[in-house]
Length: 314
Ligand SMILES: [Zn+2]
Image 1 (cartoon, rainbow, N blue to C red):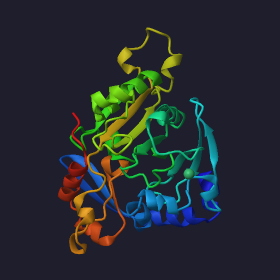
Image 2: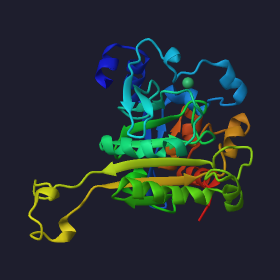
Image 3: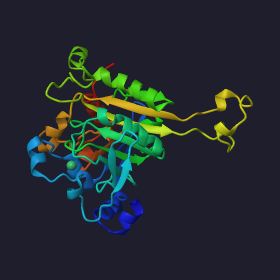
Image 4: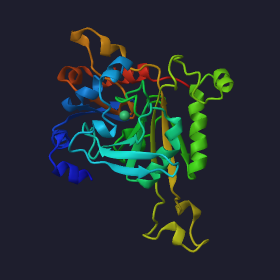
């Protein structure tokens, strides 16, 4: 689907071509290998106005009526019963970069779709799936969607560090056990009394007027490793050191958020940094769409901004 769409030379083709020109700055932050990307094509996402009034005025670009002429759609039926549209993201950060949106126009909300997110991670082990909360970087908070990017795109996948953005990692081999463990972590973002009163796991977020706590989520599935070219499952039981057996496992990282955007986003022109943290930023890749912000964003500033928007939940 990816190559077919690029071959049609639509907007995605132009923006994927532009990806090869993206300037990258490597930044080591307290030993964590972050990166800063200067990607002018992302200006619409960085500056996205997601106020209810603005959303009212625009056509939804994730609904079938709103997709562009060249965009192809692959339907994915989740075992949970939901159907999702998988499409090439016309404003990519990575290559390839897909959006996975609900076939129904419904608000961005994690819990009804978390299990599907894990099924998708298992079905696409070469991809990392992530979710931006409605106040944490989603540019379509009115239409439920995930994104899928190649595994190892995000530094935190290979350099997990709880100090960076107060990340919490959950690992389990069984999907349902993992789902329950992730939900337990997510419940830490709620005020327990309110959550139990309403019977809703997402009630009582620190921002009372919002329907779910502010969070960014990353999930991926590591399939069982082959040992000497033979899958562990095919080996005679008892002949192998158990430590050599690696069974597949689910990984989910939860970032709780305090702020939607940092103060520097609203600063006067001469000191403004147009930086709008979403999952990708919390996971170690900063994206800016203008030259001034790229030059102003030093490793120390990036660290301070991530600390400013992250919530210390534990
Ligand atoms: Zn929609």
